Structure formats: structure tokens, C-alpha cells
View 1 (cartoon, rainbow, N blue to C red):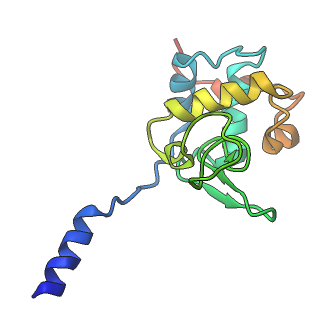
View 2 (view 1 turned 180 degrees about the horizontal axis):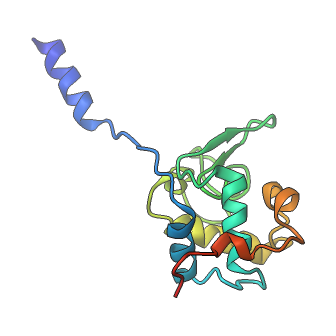
View 3 (view 1 turned 90 degrees about the horizontal axis):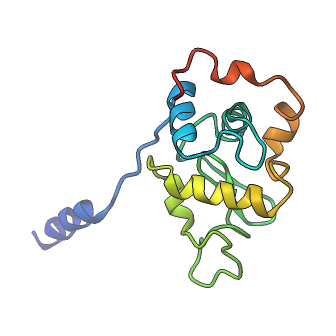
Length: 148
């Protein structure tokens, strides 16, 4: 009986993170409202294209890298430099827990992505953007979306 009670308590304490995969147009609206359109000179199409190739718009995307770090969330933000994965993290330039980058609320992820774009070489941080989006006509990425 005691074991069953403990298991029930643990079940109540465990938070399940459900994967949220946004649509292109929903992200376009969120990104536009957050001021990403023309942020640091990059059009909304750049941000939508980058998010697609980094995470396929999946808020809970995680990628383990060979150096032991992890990329988190819709923008695949790296734990080594930008977010706090462990208690004793050397860096954490975005001043955010990596787990906060895995939620449906994209506020922390967007703030951190803006910081990365501002403090590094624009969008060159994101390999998905460099490989698939840089220098291309990206107007199709927001086509058909009601972005105000």
C-alpha cells in the first residue's frame, strides 16, 4: 500500500512535456508579433525558414552533439554557450534554463535567438539557415499567412 501511494505521488509530480509542432503560418504570426521581422536586417522568411530546418517547428526538439552539449527547442539553441543545462554551467549568455527553450511558450526562445543574432554573426550561428536559407528568395515562407 505504501509503495502504491509513493508511485501515485511520483506520478503527480512528474511533468510530461508534450511536443508542440507549430504550423508555418502560426509561427509567422508569433515571430511577427515578437518583432523578428527585419530584426538585425533579417526578414520574417529567414526566421521561419531557419526554424523549419533547425527543428521542423518542434518546440521539444533536442539534438545531442559530439562535444557533449545539446541543442534545444525550435531554434536549436546550444547548452554550452547559451542556456543552463546543469547547475554549474560556465556560460549561459541568455540567462535561461535549457528546459525553458522546450515549452510551447516561445518567449524565452525568441529572446535568446534575438540575443544570438545580435551578438554573433547574424543568423550564421544556425547551420540550417546557412545551408538552406541564406541568400535565397524566402518570400514563400510567409506566403498565405495573415501576418499583421
